[in-house]
Image 1 (cartoon, rainbow, N blue to C red):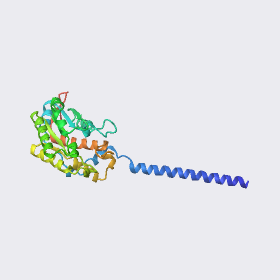
Image 2 (image 1 turned 90 degrees about the vertical axis):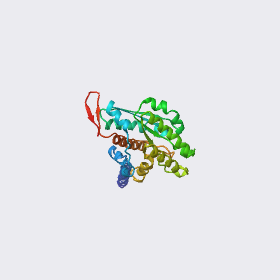
Image 3 (image 1 turned 180 degrees about the vertical axis):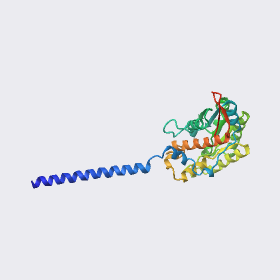
Image 4 (image 1 turned 60 degrees about the vertical axis):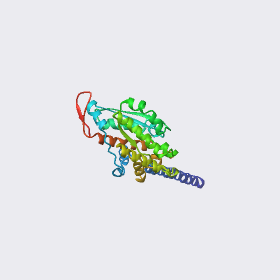
Length: 280
């Protein structure tokens, strides 16, 4: 009897210990899941506008406004390299042009919206200039977003050379009646590896100002997202230290949509049914 009593006690003790260990493990998992859980969609989008007042973006887009007023349609060409093509997009459909198209459709109800992705990974500004007639002008867009110069900054091709390429590209879009948005270089966690990085950013700012085109302040926005501590480093820039990943692409698209809608202003769009719908 004594032996059975001790065996029963040991079994109960072992059972309790196993149950408590399992419960503790589940609690740790739950706590970790809570800490690292992805924010809700609304919260995720709100954090994209962290420090928005410090990096305002409201371009003047007369061609886009005219296209919406007269045709009820807006075509945007996204010209660029790997950031535009969507390198680092883990889901395959979260590139910034894809998200931008969805956002513009949501915010401009009744309008026919098309965002054409003309991103080719690894291309230089000169490569893009050579295909601007075929890939931009031929598409007859109202807006072109030109993401470029990262290759030039990394390879240090020469600041004046970049300025000439940018001026020629802007001239082509202007002659075709297309609104141009230049995109600033990205903020990089380890940009110190490129000693002339800020010099090339200065070239883009100066060229945009002199040519009277909008400059999307990507660098300031990304730096603001990082310093806001609402993102993990892995959400903004991939393991290579250069390319965006899904959260960064979405935030960039949202801020571009903010600016484009603000630049178009309040207008009435003729829908296919013949009824005019005001934009916000």
